[in-house]
Image 1 (tube, each protein chain N blue to C red):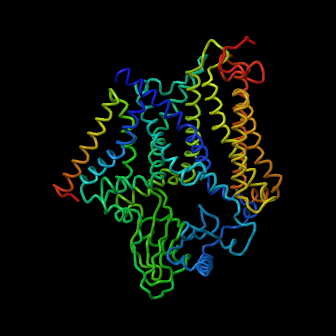
Image 2 (cartoon, rainbow over the protein chains, first blue to last red):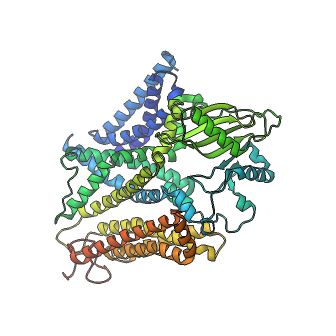
Length: 87
Length: 532
């Protein structure tokens, strides 16, 4: 249980931040225009990550899921910001 | 969902509940009281109760007196506007060690003035358990666990959500009844709990969300974007040429006018803050509440000398950021629907406290050994812990109100006396519940809470009876209403004490809530030697 929780606590936060960033960049208009709604989303995302890790079949899988969430969020954010050039 | 998953979520729900429940109980009970922060503030200063509302015209004098003593406050100074929220004007300005504040009465050396900090202390218990910055971060983590408890609670309860929603099976199975009560309150007030878990975490962990969003998502531009997204008056440099700012009274009137021109007829200014006071470029922001909207917080930014509107955040005339920002506060503090919503938040706050209390009771009930009088050691420990933290904090808060009434007769530092009384009462309750068997400690501490709560009203009548009746005759109901609330809570505590006593003497003997045969419970954790 503790290993799962650690995955959600440690990796859930950056994953939540990255995905909040992805949504803010995807939203029409500059990300600055939806900054506060994005900030509001951060904690529900983190809480969901903390709960979701408990539906993984094993602690190892929970860590893999969280790493994937971070990797995909990071990749998408990079794609949107630096390749597509969204502001 | 597999059985194993459901099992894991049950364990998760149990443990985040046990870890966070006691702190959430205190936050919800103090939060429910804090809905009436303004009313408690009137009550806490007996010398001031009968005084009329201070007039905003005196604001100019207050600002000038503060600036004469603290010239650095020119950079940033604000005053509260008397009205629904505040009775007197308080000036606030930042210094190196944080915000300072004062009032005209304090500046004039009035020793009676505003020494009690009761309402603010109850609020501090709500947002940080009264432990300052550490407590604030701690409560942020608690809010996070609270969110996890909500999600996991819904997951395990989901299958029976609708069929069992309104079931309250009162019968021989006490656990069933507590479980039903816990579930129905949890589910029906879920939207309210989601609001608190999210806004609570945000308000407490602002610094953390800043750090991660700045680092991972938005980069260097984040800080500036945040300032723009939340402030109304633009950032300006001082021009260096002096210009006389408009008075707070004139600015409040002008703000009302501007709001009305934008279709907000009921704008109530409650805070006015200046930057670069006395400079030609100086700005002023008039903040207040608008009715008939969720995001009540409204702000109008103007040039302080000319009154020219620079920017504004009014219902119907603002962007997504300012709407969300205003709604965030209104939803957390319940400031969007007048008295009705205040009472609703009060009731839901107490219901929330019950949710956490009943959660702990369920933990105990689940681990109860049904065939032996003496219960496992950990069940005793949890019972003691629940009695100390939940009932003890109610007793401590009631005692703080007593300190507010009595301390002025013995000390000048009423605020400190209030804090020490609260701490002392809480420690006594903790000691009491670790010394006495839980069944007796619960009854005794509930009875003590009832006596102390009732004592608030009785003592207030004894000490300020004449003033009390004259206020009542004038129809100024705030003070009598606070005392009436104390009596109502006293009645509720007394009822709970009576019920707990009945269970202790008439209920199932195979429980920590049953009175042990002798006064001490040396036998806990062991098989009982006799069935008395």
